[in-house]
Amino acid sequence: MSQTKTILRALAGETLPTPPIWMMRQAGRYLPEYRATRAQAGDFLSLCYNSELAAEVTLQPIRRYGFDAAILFADILLLPQALGADLWFVTGEGPRLSTITTQAEFDKLGKGEMIHDTLNPVYETVRILRRELPEETTLIGFAGAPWTVATYMIAGRGTPDQGPAHALKEENRALFEAILERLTESTIDYLSAQIDAGAEVVKIFDSWAGSLKGDDFERYAKYPAKVITEEIKRRHPGIPVIAFPRQAGDGYIGFHAATGADCVAVDDSVTPEWVAEHVQPGGCVQGNLASRHMVTGGQELVDETRKVVDALKNGPHIFNLGHGITPDADPENVKLMIDTVRGA
Ligand SMILES: Cc1c2[nH]c(c1CCC(=O)O)Cc1[nH]c(c(CCC(=O)O)c1C)Cc1[nH]c(c(CCC(=O)O)c1C)Cc1[nH]c(c(C)c1CCC(=O)O)C2
Image (cartoon, rainbow, N blue to C red):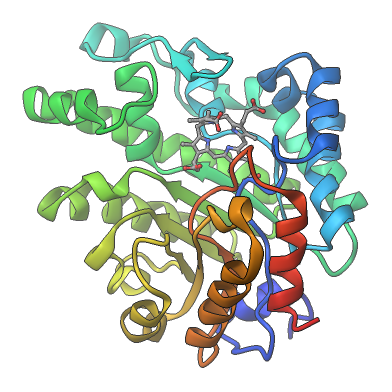
């Protein structure tokens, strides 16, 4: 069946005259309506598990801007919570989790179908969104990649260099690999349930892929992405997968072919010209305007947006930022970026 939704067309390999556009963290604190709904929910996690309100914040940027895709509102750390880890968010600091650094702690984690007990409200959010989204808007589901989620589970929090996860990898490789395997299996089940509920595309966020070097990148970024992608496509033929091995640098080269991903999302530490030459020949690419332009705006935003569009116009491309939009962004700058991409 030929696709009419622009994102699905780009993911199928079509080069479009205007790239479809959405934005990482498009539902977020830079929007006053998001802050209001979050206050109504009480806190961030309550918002994630309140299907009606999570659907509402997912829809807010679609109403305001008419993005071509909506991304399910949830978080990559809901999965460790569903496996039995404690999770909470400290305002102004970020996530905290109970740590997994010993075999005994690992043995307490759950597996298999039990994750759905916790994650059912997320699937309900997806079902609401499929009813309420405009016909032309694609719904993207997501999960964290095993390595990135493991870095939080091992350290119990975000870390600048993923030091604790690297340390466990060196000190107890069997345990480290067991954590990644458990996450790989559960991620497949989690994404699969999102697709059953109505997600049309899934994205795997490997935000810390860039700290894996050499053989580690192959084994702990590329390989899990390949296992997840292959199994998702086996269970759900035709569902496109976007992989985001952030800050992979040269590791982006060949990532489509090595994993089977339909699209590789790239961050802004590589130039769009480099991406056009080295990554886009492998398939659709997504990215990669620096998010700081959503704060600074002006002519530089317009020029840099045009540069990204122009550099990637000869192949399949989904316009996005190189990473999530930040809370200090100006909503007017988002409008300016969209108008520039769409040539208004
Ligand atoms: C590493 C990571 C996390 N979460 C996520 C990642 C991978 C992508 C990336 O690198 O940005 C992914 C994520 N988190 C969120 C989404 C929703 C969809 C979207 O709009 O992109 C997605 C796809 C909502 C969120 N997740 C979070 C917020 C902010 C929470 C709030 O409203 O206070 C949102 C909108 C919180 C969160 N969640 C996480 C951290 C480190 C934080 C705190 C940092 C911060 O405060 O910005 C873990």
